[in-house]
Image 1 (cartoon, rainbow, N blue to C red):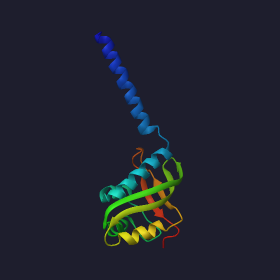
Image 2: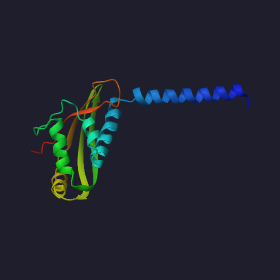
Image 3: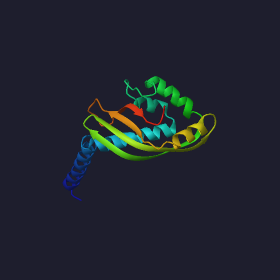
Image 4: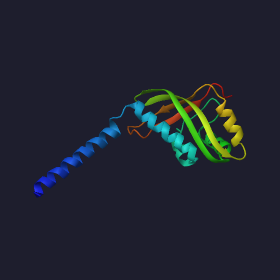
Length: 157
């Protein structure tokens, strides 16, 4: 095989891969970025990966239940810490997004086994008929910098 042909072919493949990667990083719509961030957050919650969950919550996080970032993590650890297994089934009923901000409305159902508060949490979450609303913001330029600024459900007091 001709060495120049091999070099040109390899260069073309690398260029195509670089262009695809650049599109994937910078070319996806804000809606696609938020959908990906929401899915990653749900996986982190299922795994009870508190470092990753903390990274998803904005420093300015607040919610209708009086939590800030730190107290939300503490309450999450208390309520979800007793689960041996946890699966989150979500139906993203609506995603609205613009550059730098967005909102996800999703029905959430939980499946799992555990001790302590786990059965109470399953029963309470699964009886809700209103969607959870996640408010997202991305103050940076990177598509992976999305953070949750607020979570609420009108039926939770």
